Image (cartoon, rainbow, N blue to C red; front, side):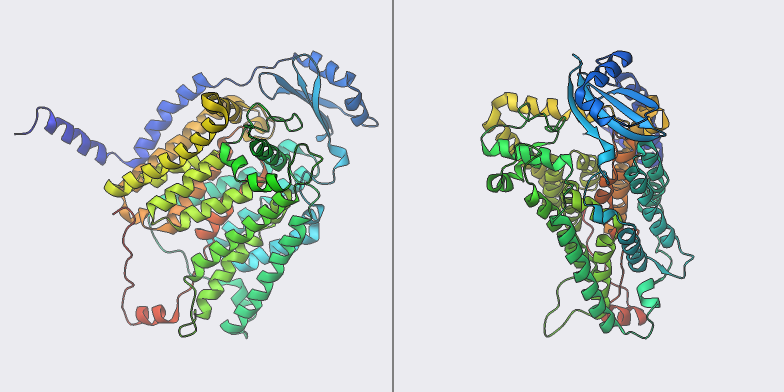
Length: 566
């Protein structure tokens, strides 16, 4: 005999399953927007505007930075509840910037006129280098005929270069706005590929195959191997010798050095990098071997080892994309078909030839390592335990991958769901244990307090600040939550979608771009999170092995792989 109310619950559950995913997304947006708006509290400004400007101008170092400059605009804004940012501009170009405490003391300052590039190696910004890499990217990612939407994808990805050019010329807000069309297009395009009707893209021939028509596949493979080796060599030379490491890697290395000495970085970091302790524990933990070998206690120390890690992460991601497109390694008795190897080489070159990547690698930033972690997690998508473990580690490395966790869990059921949840809990428990070992219970609270800065920081480098619509940011964040909820429902109901790694990669790219647009701060360095996912979705290099082509010509359909959610 059924329990009382069982039929009612069953009918309610069935009715819920009939609700369209888009309607659930709209419901989440409608609920989240007012809640986030009411709870959104930007940091208070610790000093009034006039007092902050006066204190900055009284500082000898600031006066030296402004010597000979004709600034016409001064902006004042809160970094957090205790720090104030004062920025000096001349005809829209930033000249200098200082950070002050509530007592008017200057704790950090930057003279932007002395730097030829924002960060990284100046070689990577050279117009010839950018143009050469962009041309190679078009050749390996574009297709013929030219009237294909894939070529529009390539063009919109390259449009992000405008942000780099403007920031190099010290136009801060315009550099953010320049990236808005490209990021918005790629987000919508990826969401459509992932959640729209599943259909094959229009056929096209890679441009590299069109230009040298007389070259056969084997010779093209040899040429692509040499080209890939040359590009990899450029990454090694430019990346390892870069003189312009970004402050993020100094912060991570200083935190790792603290861990080597048995001290948590949270609350114990030197003041040369403002809020250098705002990253999750794994950011510092993974760099501990480097810190033990070459400790870093200030921005005067060398971070060459961290630069080498960024180069290695970029090359490892290229290798992973190659294996994804080319398949398993061949053998002497049955070598890999040239068509498959060519597809793999194009995929690796598509990643390495994107101009923003060389700049990002030359900064030594941890964002390149995060890109490698994300692509590795996606490539083992059909193994929920391992894949979720990698994603959980990525979320403990940087917070952003946490937005992908509902996508990883939504299609799972039964034993597979239990394994994935255990993987998340296992990674979190292990790292929480490290926090307890180094700092006790207060170590956990100290990390949470430090990481909270990422959710409340004030910065002119965001979409909302650049457009002057800060009050609408909670609505943008609610839209992101709605997209996550709607996508999770679709994945739960659609096993075919859950089994298509290309569409999953597109969905992850859409969510990561949406997170960047909804965040408090944006830098072009973050594009590398998304780029390998674009290489696996919109810019995927497809090739059919001769055996498969023969089978399909005879009418035989390729066998479907088991769905990941089963």
